[in-house]
Length: 301
Image (tube, rainbow, N blue to C red; front, top):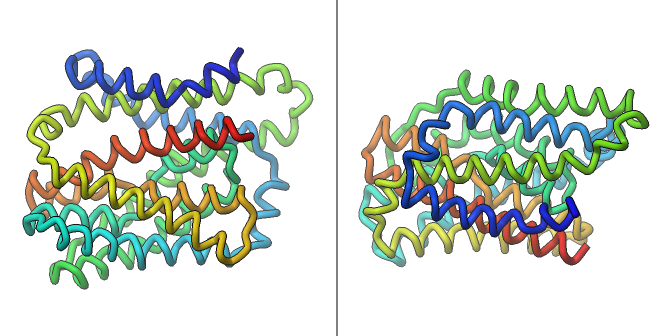
């Protein structure tokens, strides 16, 4: 029963997103719960892991380098090319570049978990890309936009520590030492994660309702195409290097799901509200596309 409910989470995400769009007041007041909910999801993921999972991941560092290379070489390039082809304004191109130059988002870990990917690998990829973004995000924005955008290093590292690492490590610690006693409640963690991420998506839609109402079709096409190219490159390149399907789907999700929240914050602070539109839309779209992809992979399993 729980398995069937979890498999339907993309549809719940779409339904709740529609409700949030037409009735934003129902969800916008829950903005302060996003971080605690993400931490809860990360703790739930940790409860399905053991130290052995992380030990296995450390043995294959090349796949982490591969993911980071796709993340920072191809994703900004895709954003730039798409902006040129669709003839986006300078402000919208700026928003696309900021999204493309971002690190992997914490939502990628959740979608990877729901897609039955390698969660330990996904978490380490997010940590590595976040650390790399401290240097590469300003460098890439200067390369493509000829403008230096300061990245909030301390804030980024603090959020990764508090939202991702600590909850996951706590869950992993409990699961490693008390696995037998926790067997009964283990099936509840995917359900808890699913409902949490669906609620988070609804909150994000509600908070961006005004932006979405003023959205032009070219921006929607640009964001969807950028995400699609990330999914294709994220799966296809590791596949060419003969990695197994589980690793390919993990890299695929990690690469295509950017830390769009940071790109929105930087766009508003250093550019304009218009430049924040691609990131605002991406934060919604990548969760829905990732959820649908996770459903597909879960059904195949």
